[in-house]
Image 1 (cartoon, rainbow, N blue to C red):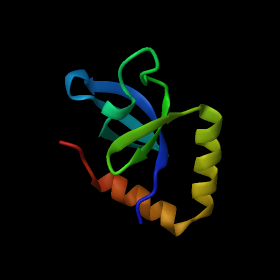
Image 2 (cartoon, one colour):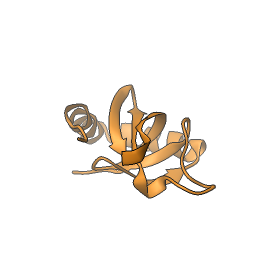
Image 3 (cartoon, one colour):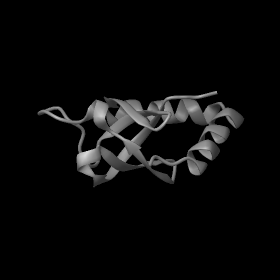
Length: 92
């Protein structure tokens, strides 16, 4: 199962390629942020995004991020499996 999970942008690692490092429940991974970048409303360090298969697909506020993470944690094994897949993935 692929879930869209909240992640916080920690740093931009390659702005030209729209790559940023995000953190999800202690797991850090480089992802593509092209869909949430650019313009006045573009994502920045510290912002929360919904992450799906290596792409930040939308910005969300911090309260929504925490509420969603809490709901996902309640799923137990499904959420842990998603975190395991995130740990083993990488964007090149």
